[in-house]
Length: 118
Image 1 (spheres, rainbow, N blue to C red):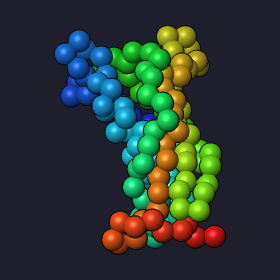
Image 2: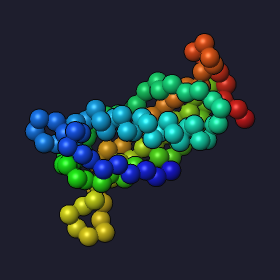
Image 3: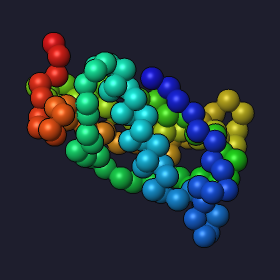
């Protein structure tokens, strides 16, 4: 699954760079959308991200590309690899700025773990 996001002035920290919390929010949101599309009717909660390391800075006006792929499936949980790229200064090139695995667990209406559909 592929998504894009435009970095706007309200996404910047006091130094003029993308505030990391926004990036983490978008990563979680896009991974959740992938899970919801892969398992319609299931309710998911995020239980973890395996690594948070910002590799490149991002400025206002940058278009980010998010690539989300299912990487692991358990009995009640599913994991998605999320890679985030920004356009490079060179034509037709991108740079990876962030990568992580987001894990969700399927829950029932009471918040208890629930097996994923087969």
